[in-house]
Image 1: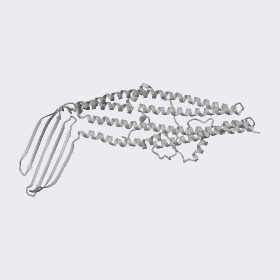
Image 2: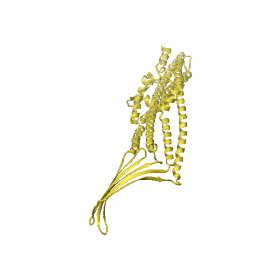
Image 3: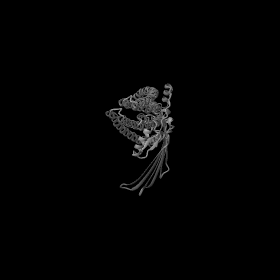
Length: 486
């Protein structure tokens, strides 16, 4: 005689009910059965840890590679700005063959020029010109001469602050470009973390769906046993069979989500979309205590977006200073000397001069227009700076509060999962004793699936909240020990 109670307890006591949550490396027996069946139809899985995913993203992500390519041009812009105060050399040469009604001749000219701009606005130029003409009838003639000129602005363009303003602008732009690179890398790391954990979530959802399908099949077997023993009407098995069909549908949806999550991560890592990746990172959940005041100070010192706004304000102030300088008269001190000589002949001409040059713009509104635009730009940037500061305060407060809330939620979800699991076990035992019904067991089975999904979502949300907090505080690169190769 079959021991019906022992058979029912054996079926209901399978490890599928007591499967652990979010443990890809240690799946339940039901999860392992389902995973083996699924892997049999797939290529061998390539295990990928979270740190490896981040490393691949930093190496091959297309957005980061594009930013690094742009950095080549940006760093050359800074080099050009520094070269503003380096000597500039120009070489001009010309050779002509001419003829007129009296003669034929050939003419060659060479004119090298050197110029220098000092950090105080002084312009120094030195040029030398050499030429010779060879005529059939008139014979050869040679000429050469040098000219030295010094121009020192006294009003417009005078002083180190004005003359070096373009270089300071370029240096500030370089700082902003480096911050933009840092922000792009941090955003990429955070995005990769999110995609990796979404793949992990999809894998766990597939395990949950597989476990639920196995439990549904177990319930059908129990129903068959109860019907055979005459302790259940035959039509009651329809509920369990409907549950099996529902779980098969959910399993197909989980598989589809898993494929989509894997493709999204592969694209972010710039890998072949056919690569059978499997997330293997076992999350370490530890409570993170954050002081809101210290977090705000850290964000003000490190967050790239906020620091770029500060730099933009400094650049706007320099722009106003230059626009105001353009309103001045152009008064300059001139000094120079020149020497010229021609051969045949022994005459050598010398000339020296010193003086003042004044230029007064009258009725030119374009200069005033530039000042108005610069002042408006500065005022607008100050408004954006105030908005950016307030936004940073809100982002930090939201991130700190969110991480505390997410921690409490995942704790509550963990307790709810254990209670749902225990509740289902008790109801299955009651069904085995004939003191419950299919409807009640199926209801508690649905509660367990919901509790597993909620616990999984709460855990992933807490881990993502940590990554989001790092991004807000500007500490993502420090947390992952990433140094910019710039």
